[in-house]
Length: 433
Image (cartoon, rainbow, N blue to C red; front, side):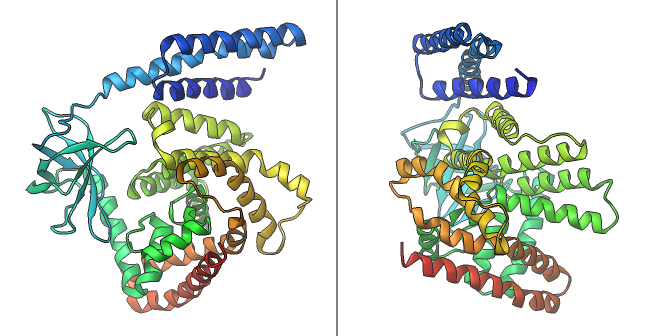
């Protein structure tokens, strides 16, 4: 077995161990599973006379390592949170707050003597910002997803700007771009554009949000790997046009890292950012790029950082399943459907990739939400070719608004045409689903 293939299977076995431990599967059951797996692989090795199965029998022991690592990390990060009773505690806002129709949501990092993170659902006003130190009074409860939340507590601001200067600067830069888009676009179109570029869905009205779900196009506003890939390619093309081809790799890595942090470093965008960097590293060193190994390595890195991602983060699960679909099923479907070329505006390529992703995420979506539309492939085929243009024009308008508002208005006219097309496809398709 080649080293690359060994790494792939080793990562899968380790992730399987983390997965089992997340469900509190007992130690005896895990040992029995590992023994059965190793025994099965050894039996196949004897029958088929292949060293591959003997290697897999040894690698199956990594399931135990995955289980151990999960419990080890849990013991290190075990939260100390006052649950079920009204308590007053001090906490810091550790991420950019999210504004909703009737509330604002922000993540709190508890200060000693408590330890852990809590999602706070508070009134719209007064507004709070990243780095604010707060005194909070309320009742913390488990939210059912391996986390904790507190609803509409009493909040008193103690100090401002207690967070990282870098994060504050990145959030401030994003806010200036968002404000530029809001100045030159109508509310609905600005909300759609901002959501596609930065993953902030606060300006999208509920009716359009429902249509996105019906048509299977919610990934457009969820900062999926496709969105991040567009950003990466745009940055590299721009840097190359400035004669910075040799430095474009390092600058692109910095831009991608900043973009991931600026947009909240959620599981989906972090996965996409890591995979984009790995892809750039492979091209920079003229090495063969293995999609499945990249997916496995990214999953391994993210589970090492936070083992709870695998079971408790739906976005993490959907993004990985979709990417596995595109990387593993797309070539098979392309061969079976006889799509040898991309087709007009790349519709064949979009159809294959969308269908591959939909097949992989369908069981999970049906299990989690009880709904899935097989017709979602059609609006995706029509909209995906327009996404790079929308994001390109969106960033041009956002940057232009900082330099010259009249210049931004000119590009905003072209952006509105693209956004209107995408919105029309989504709203019309929703009527038939």
